[in-house]
Length: 387
Image (cartoon, rainbow, N blue to C red; front, side):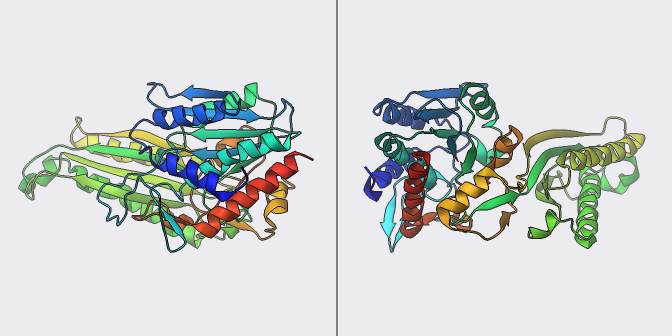
């Protein structure tokens, strides 16, 4: 019950479900629900709007406040176009590593959290162990929102949340927030020799790219605030990851699409950055319409991730440091679901096995030593909940 073999068996089952974010995660949840039921633990689901995906949460132990939530996501990124040397949907052990999609990010932690359930029952914990498994973390971290609200409303209030994103079991107390927009610039096509009579969607989109470059230069030059100083880089970044458009070399582009996102340091307001972008889009669009009224810029906000702000005397930080022995300061620039828990009033940290550098990669892996360290964490947590 307390050995690594049981956790490995769970990991094998979880990885076998190809829960890419674009697809359903319900078969995986069916298995988890059956697993929990085998220990007499009732699971609850919070479905997506279309019913094709769901969150799952459960509470193990007495219905009293002061428990700990173990939070993980069930979705993974695609393997399309990646050069894998192993089957991504089968855990392969080789050279002290466990290969497979999600072994690191983050079904390794999910497996360990589920392995902790029989540990908690056998130990007769005095405070509950609560499990929270989400969907769509990889495409915006918003799938968990309904589950977080329902847990806060229906379960005894936990004293701490541990989000098990790969941190090499280091205690991460802060991360950047984020907001992203899909931007569609609609121009007006004319022959390029008559450039002044049309509106080039690509050339207008270039103004948005220059706006992003200018904001990055300004932010880089600014002295970082006390919360931002620990981050790398210690400033809010504006990034365009994709851009496409145009019909032919000699036609002003009728369409251009780009994706732009902000990675916002704690201490700055992500909504203020979003508003600034919307305002710049409005300014450029107004100038475009002076040339051709048919032209426009359409925005689709596709994610919003609140940052995780370091807490003064946070219960989650104290717990995680006590269990891991890690007393150093760690913050990260990637986003997680931790900010949603923190906004709901939970004391929250990020702490999980594996290295984020392996996430999303072909031949993704978690080191066996990291997986074992995660199991040690679960054992120590169960002991703590029994006190």
